[in-house]
Image (tube, rainbow, N blue to C red):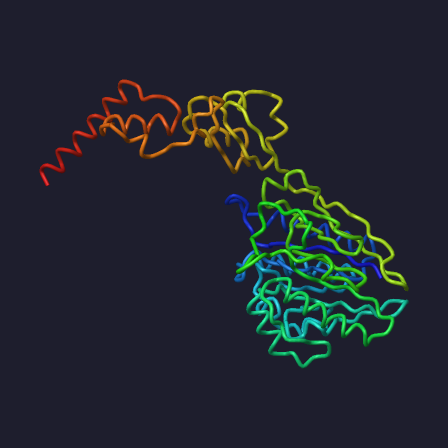
Length: 392
């Protein structure tokens, strides 16, 4: 059986205010092309299908279109919700969707009940563990502790609820002699590397869980972290299909192509995804960035720009976007270090009158002292305020 592991689509997410639905539609269409080209049997998606619990209508349309393309390419689909999703919304009409090859595993009470698909070697059990927020999940697991292999969860935290979930999975798997297995889970496993775009899942304690929690299955498809990574041969994150922060600019977004033979995991290969619009970071003085030919290759990139001018340039972003229309983030860090020097409020204001404080404010904001004409304007404004206060 050939399985494609993808995750963290975050359909509907924006990037520094820019709509990404077009980019998402393009890269998800490439996943459907991979399914057809590689003759994939099953696509697994362990969480964060959407970027928010209540996605927009346009996000839902984009997601439905992507899933339809994958089904048309010939693969069954197994999905579990992540911490960004609403399990109830993702799981709506799950029983009806399964008849069409879309298997939505969203209920904690049924996480030990796999989707069973077959190939020439026999059955493969796909267990979907929805994102387990520790306290609600602990109560839900304890409320259905009459399933085989179940126990009461007495400890708090991610490790406790995921350990119990996996115990129930292994208990069910033990009843299926010789059955191969795949687990989908949305978690932060110890030893993995995170990016800036992931929302923390620490709720009242440590969010990490040890890799050994997932022992005893042929392959575990992980979601939540956005960088593709291998923790063990059978334990991997596929990462997100697009970069959602500049910390991911150097990542090669990809999916894992997993092969199961008669004995279990036969191999895993990486398949890189196309990049609709690359990301880059650049620093320099404004005029240099606007005129130097060597920066021309960045004109179609999403850009994070750091300006190093000694004085904060006026209308810098507007001017930069004339050359770099996809510049989305701007910082000012002058080479003289003035913008980053720590300020102690008590020291700054001590023994200074209103005129000096106003002048200091201008200097701190842009990195240069106000001119004589600007000081005249500040003095005039302060006198007007004082006159209004006296009159009042």
